[in-house]
Length: 212
Image (cartoon, rainbow, N blue to C red):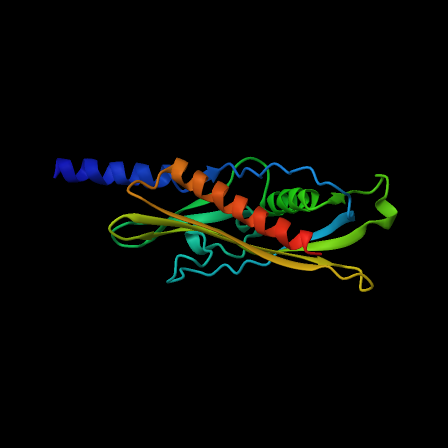
């Protein structure tokens, strides 16, 4: 009986201390473009990810406690841990620090644009008046796991960048993905997963922007 009580206390402490874990999302360094293709200003960023309550598939964004209507929480959440034996969803993975999905996606797109030859400007900057206004739509940005004999960690990202000027055409949609198997899905593994997934997303965004 004593052993059972100790075990329950340990499990409770573990669960309460791991409700949320933070991941440092590192954005790839931009490369210097040979020529300037144009100027862009980011007018809006929209998080269009679809969160669901207790989804069967771990690839669907969810949140501990099913608080999917709380934007202050979902704006920072980018992944979810599952129990390896029972496949029950456990704690959240959030963006580390003060930033959220809007800040991260803006940084990714700004870097991708720069690598493709575009300069991102804000109000007050030179060339702001002739900059193309664009919107960023975050369609997917999610890290998840699939327990098997080992643990598959998967990151899926998808970002769309579209012109807000009907007279100028710019509509780019790019995806990024990374997956690897591990026997221990600790914080370092999740950080590496997201970092490599963001690199792939950035690479594909650059290719799309260069084609414009």
